[in-house]
Image: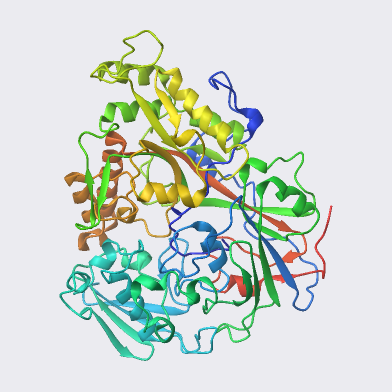
Length: 599
């Protein structure tokens, strides 16, 4: 997204892996990395190959319409409200009309200059949020302190079925009593006046600086609704409002959105007259760019990038993505009554040696170097290199080592007892591992088969769930429901700007899809957001221990770090996708011609 700072939950969230068909083969182990591919995960961060800003310096036209292509083989779900959405395609739509309140710096900490500012006090246990006096909803109503407080009331309510009720929410004074129905209000949230809200936390945590909830919810629109009905309501699905640089003029849910300029945008009317968004299948994306049918593709599929055949009428921008791909293991279920994950000691994937072996069997280096042109690199930790203060560069990760994988399996009792080349479990029973993977590109199935062949090479029988890839929304419905037919799954996470990983891996996190829990993990995650963690060295140590624990236990194995590309028609000006771009970056975008440049 355009320099977006919002905390993404690509269950976020990111679409499935998309790779080049011709680079896959049945075994895949004989291929060698491309000669010019980055050699380490660090190199992706500093490739310098792509600019983060458009270079077009031609004279601007007045207004104009930008055509935005949402690359996807499925419709966007159309849950267009930050309180309720889960899929990244919906986030791509919302960026135009419902941005986060807060501006952030290159370290992802909140700074002044956005739709609201914050001030810490009371030994960092109190934050005061001050909303800009000029910030209005696109229906004309002012964005108020009551709207901001109302978002917390909805998310904290026991009837809320979304995934935003996380550890930072629980740390608000009075939130747990409110969530349990013991109190009608949240005692730690006080409306000081029309534009100021005070939030008191039980313990001070540095996550407030980067992870504070950043979206109000208009109370005049939602206040009389039952919370369980909100996500399916017309103000979310049919006629959503926001406070961004653009507003929705018309929409065909799942297919297209026509935005018009928000002339009352608090930082000044945008330069464009509007934005026309449409879903474009990756199969026809290159042709659409060449014809000028789309000006801008945010999240251009890296598998389609080829310097020899790239469209000449577009410019490619790039940045390290705040995301990673991973392999997850189903180790239990989410107990909604307790509001936490509960491990099953008898789960098929409960043996960590089996999990570790599967990690060592995966040839991620080949995937990244050959199939992603070096724009994906083997991941080593669940904290990405972009978080330079906390990423543990000493972790080797699960580098490709099939012999080590075989040794781990042998020692754990997973051996081939009937001579068919496939291992049985330690009890001598047939072992079939059911694998869920997403569709999203014509070559998604071949890459799933590539990994399956990697595992077969070490004697593991891995089969696709129901014999096919899963459509994006169905995939996550099954993952969230802990479908017993799933043993392992491939997906990706957008980390957002907050280093704290407890929202993805905490005991009470709904996004903790592996359902892994441990007292040590609880301890390290708690330390990482404790008052002591305002001391950066203390926080570094806490997260280093957590990274090492997760490497050892392997409930989730990171596979690839990601470098994201944006394809931009050469008539587009002033587009800046850097993470420290100005808060009103969308409003500054211009065009230098009435019609797109074509090839």
